[in-house]
Image 1: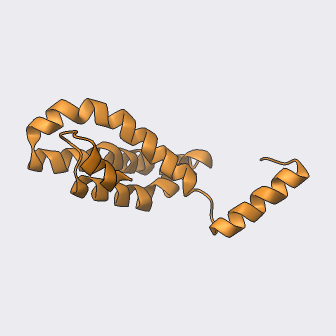
Image 2 (image 1 turned 60 degrees about the vertical axis):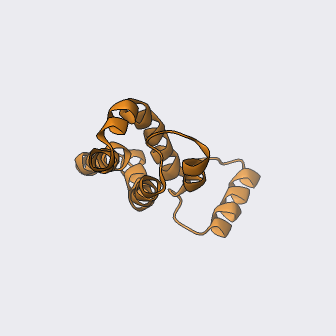
Length: 117
């Protein structure tokens, strides 16, 4: 969807390379960051904050500083909240440790037994 958006929307800071960079870094780090947050692993909090910042804004800043600093200046403030929201949504989607089939079976079992937590 990010790559399609790079072709559909005419935003000055949306292209295929940054879409891939940000998607890959989110895929690699968002589930772990979400676990640190949800499981209250306080000792790992500083690294989680650093990785979250890097995935949401750091890699974006590095790429656009090199590619087109003017686009960075125009769009950085708008990109940060959208990217942070997407990062945490990805973290929630990939938080579950198991296959999609196991997730659905677990969800059905919990709904059947009236346990959501």
